[in-house]
Length: 116
Length: 116
DNA sequence: ACAAGTACTAACCCTAAAGTAGGTATCTTA
DNA sequence: TAAGATACCTACTTTAGGGTTAGTACTTGT
Image (cartoon, rainbow over the protein chains, first blue to last red):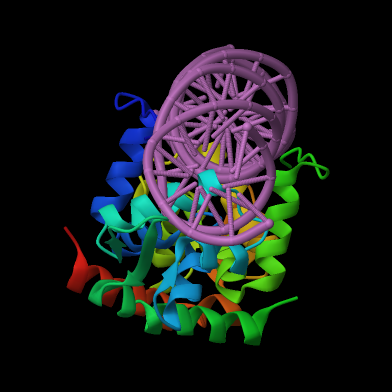
């Protein structure tokens, strides 16, 4: 999906961090510009591709599916496609995805207390 | 410190995310390759520059001070320099920095439950 | 016949984050 | 006199994340 140079120090350090530090591991799953926002939007229930797109107006379609695919590959999100025309695809949080809510909540609490 | 193109869509989207989503805000403070690791190392108490460097062998000096400076600018870390030769500088978590421990803990818990 | 709605895909480019390689100052100790 | 210890700094290069633009398939409504 995104070409990665597996021999680069950059990549090796990343792997190191992920395996050595659980926080880093979690961050690779929910980090990035869009994942927290997508997950947040799915917290209130499953949504169609188009609904997500409208809910997050500034995201491009490329970023939206790319992130959805990654979340799906990481088993944080389930994709439910109904074989109809026009397509009907719903994305919803998996168990692991829902289990992120305490993580998100603690971050929100911290942000509210210590922002500016 | 790091030249930023303020007019880029990339940058604008980032600002959007930070202001709209508290999770994104928190992630800008503790995200990246090294910050979680540095913070984790400071959780057990203040440490000198050199101690941190030895505790995180794969980090380069550039990345170490760069991240320490950012953490300091964000008031997550305090820098205490004793005016002696050779220099003696200690870094310790601020109140806001210590307050991250529930955030880190929830991430660790999630990682332990849902990794692989 | 053509636009609209749906959920994507692929090619390409730009930039911020990370890494590489070198240098600085001051004092103590050998 | 020169090496070692300490905490940095600067210029440069590489990598990966994000953005832009265009196009796909299939059917319904006009």
